[in-house]
Amino acid sequence: MRVYNFAAGPSTLPLPVLEEVQKDLLDYQGSGMSITEMSHRGKQFMAVNAEANALLRELMNIPDDYAVLFVQGGASQQFAAVPLNLLQKGKADYILTGNFATKAYEEGLKYGDMAVAASSKEANFTYIPDMNAVKFRDGIDYVHITQNNTIFGTRYIELPKTNATLVSDMSSNILSEVVDVKKFGLIYAGAQKNIAPAGLTIVIVRRDLLGKALPICPTMLNYAIQDKNDSLYNTPPCFAIYVAMLVFRHLKSLGGVPAMQKINEEKAKILYDFIDNSSFYTNSVDKKYRSIMNVPFVAPSEELNAKFVAEATKAGFVSLKGHRLVGGMRASIYNAMPTEGVKALVEFMKKFETENKNA
Ligand SMILES: *Cc1c(COP(=O)(O)O)cnc(C)c1O
Image (tube, rainbow, N blue to C red; front, side, top):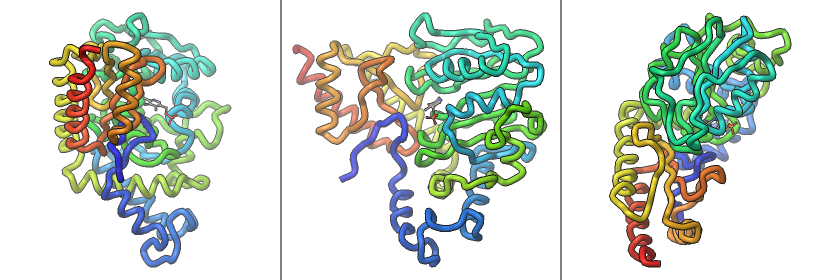
């Protein structure tokens, strides 16, 4: 039986996509083998690679002067790839809104003069700094943000006010809401949250930023080389790219990103409204900045948190344990989590509250 899987990543995939994968697995389109067993330079995989690229461009409305790259190493590898490709003057500013933003900054420190333009660390990252108040240094190569904070459950509602190249880690919000790609010089995302199995990382980069990598930049991290080779400089994560293609087709059939955004906002509202109207559960994120993808919440005590996670698991709601930096619970409600899953979770939460409120 399929469970409702609220994992933060790797996370749930759309059922029709999994069924298609299952159907294709032993014999991909009459080839007599699976997509994971064939050459990445063969006609069939090359077609998958090209279609996945074209569909992502269509879904995100990516202009022609941007390269779309399929690379490996996860979003964490991009923490290094970004400075190695973009530093010209040797300086960049970071906004610290969580664990991954901090890691990106710390990795950047190895390659240049990096500064923290703003941080919400003093409040355990429960809000996003006010963009009107954040000032950046002169002469920087880029500003780095983490648009949705997977662990802390926050998201940007406006972008930094800067003329510098804007770099965004969209690992946990890519394709969940409409973004204007033109506002960014570079977007990157690990695929395992909202797109595909782990192993694939998406990079969307404006082409005028290419070809200026630092001499020490490893060949594999050099965006210009990946672009020139259509992301086939070496063996790519073929299976993950193939599943990504199926997910992109699926999203397109549902009406694309605007339709997903509407559904995601509805799902998040169901959960937040319930939490806000309950005297049992709490979400401590500043309401203005609440993520529509990752919803952390707590019950009144550590004992009840543990009991909640255990009973939820038994009832078929899995991976609700919060990240160790936040504690409590976290429901990740990415594109592939159906509205019925969120409604069923709320019903479970109600029942648990009734049974435990006088405990
Ligand atoms: C999960 C996540 C990462 C780390 O991704 P990996 O692919 O595991 O390296 C980085 N940033 C954000 C926002 C994430 O959610």
